[in-house]
Length: 294
Ligand code: GUN
Image 1 (cartoon, rainbow, N blue to C red):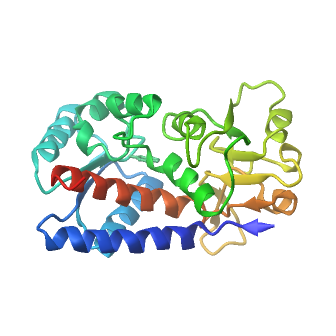
Image 2 (cartoon, rainbow, N blue to C red; image 1 turned 180 degrees about the horizontal axis):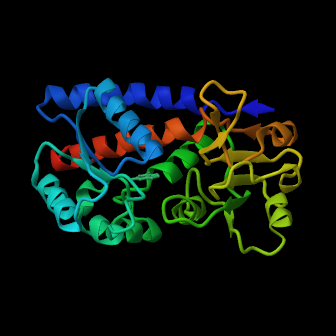
């Protein structure tokens, strides 16, 4: 069984990014990312903090905007417009999910598609569906695909079951994996909570990608012997034996599934670090485009 070390692969990508940032900076173009957090959800706060920290680590410019949970839609949209107009900013990310009174769709549609490094704007969603090389591809799907490529796991002709149909992960990931070319050419099934005989469908996968957002949902009977399992889940569950009373687990019951796998990603240290690495890479791409260097 191969443990897919997402942390090590992300570090390799990040060190390439650091060199690219240094090269761009030497020419007067420092990639800049704005991360916007509305409210004080602890998980979102932690993600935003690590994105901001990674920017600094790579020598990028980073602004972190924290808005109170009761901020008005208009104030948030005004901030997005201000960031659209700021030439030092090449990527804008509004951490999802926002509080219930915010119309997330309107926020996403206000972001300049050329700065939409999350790949959530309808223009980029359409470009991904069209297979347009200009698309900003959402970071988690891009990270999953890159993890498979870097780990030498062949997707061409493979049956890949994507468990989960979210706009952030499942749906764009299915589109990526069925595209022609490297990291694509797969036969893709999208399964979800309403799929009939879900365990049997998952068991038919050569590669199973769990992105259903339910802690340890994928059990031993979901996985065929010799399958590859990619676990996108990040769930905090209570654990009285842990230092702070909780710990992170994926969407896969790792201990019972891992022995059956050819390869599997851990949580943490699998997909998570790849997502951030891809966000940095998308922001660098955006900077290059604005500078006329890509
Ligand atoms: N929430 C969970 N994943 C993401 C992501 O990739 N981008 C944003 N903006 N919010 C998220």
